[in-house]
Length: 554
Ligand code: BES
Ligand code: ZN
Image 1: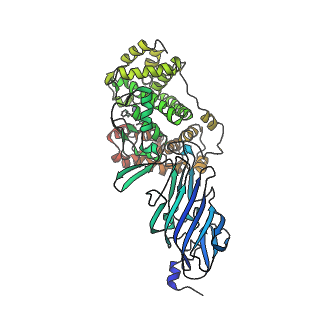
Image 2: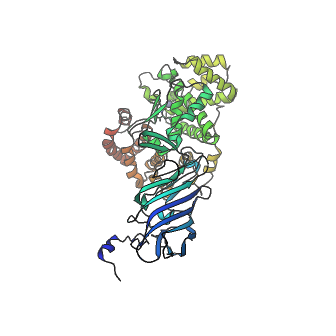
Image 3: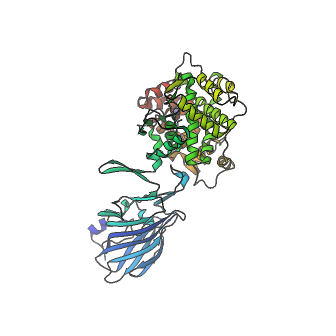
């Protein structure tokens, strides 16, 4: 037999297909997206160009073939570890199409099924495909080789309220691709997706939480009165931005690390938006009163999270905040563990610890518990109204509070004494209690909060095991990656060092940089590394971050 040389060169060793005999010209796809079973099910109609023979060889991986319409017979061959299984269809002599009824498997290599907690919105599941290089065959039976190009149409059904998108024409009706493309470029995603137009021929699809703060604005307005600034937009800055977010009126500045879809995303927008009331409307008169900005804002942020994402999520965030507060307070001078700060002779940025944020929010939470939510909500609403567009001191707040809500908690102690007074409204999370109950067996539905709590509860951490089982160094989520790298720096876990260096050179967010450099500087070997990385990374940092790290690495 033997093929000629040019055919040999064109043969694709990664496909069972023989397109020189029968070739797919066009695909009509008709699929149901079943999140509950994690499968796609329906049919693929293949329109064929025939050159010789009556066998159509297709690629499949983990597909369940129910039937093949308009064919004499079909046979699924043995599974090859790399290629998957060939599907051989015996064609009728003059047939120019066949229709394959099939379902994918929950393990399909080209599909990722996300549970609601793995999404930004937390409410709906999400699915997306990745077909390159040879994964299209795990969701469509076809000639899965870049040597074959086909046009396609697709009807994709998703549950009510969700939207499917494809790399194809999407002008209503079925998806449509009229230019012939190779199979590895066929792409589908489905979930709670919104669209924002960028220009006449471009736009962004994303979970609405990523591009739309409308629901949060409504939530704060319902609680505390009107949003008084007109529009609310987000500016996502380059990675050197030294903060998570900055509440510039009408235009929040944000770190690009939020786009990894981590906890900081939703909470950060909730936080900076909340500043439209606490901070931008009612402003701290001096930096010693900084807790009036940040404590109130964290309190409002959590109320928004509870309202939109549910109580469990709010509880997890409150517990994380509470634990971090203790962790940080342990390293602070007594004078920095009070709410009203003495900043004489200091840069106010030095007072920017978790104390104004978390102790401040805990005070408001404690007052809320003491007087009841209804009364406290009414109080805050009138507070924002009464002091609107004014700058106030801690004394102004105290005077107003005493007038409106007589003697709810030991205020003097909360504000002027170090530490957390007895009787604080301590948060609790059942979800975290589960995380603590032993080595996890099923983490598929874990949220970022649960991962953070899991990592922080390891003492001492078994770094090799954590690395082996969960591959934290490969995480795209900046919060989780940061926590892991910080632990690695603490434990002197050298396999993660290249990643630490890469992280320090690519992220400029001070909250992430400061703890890692501080940890490295604790050992002689770490000092050498810290100095070397910092020399390289420093020019890319913002002056504010440079000033902070200059004080740590020398
Ligand atoms: N206003 C602050 C950022 C800030 C504080 C800048 C002090 C300079 C000095 C902003 O609202 C903030 O708190 N950002 C946090 C994120 C937030 C989700 C807690 C941050 O940047 O980490
Ligand atoms: Zn803030």
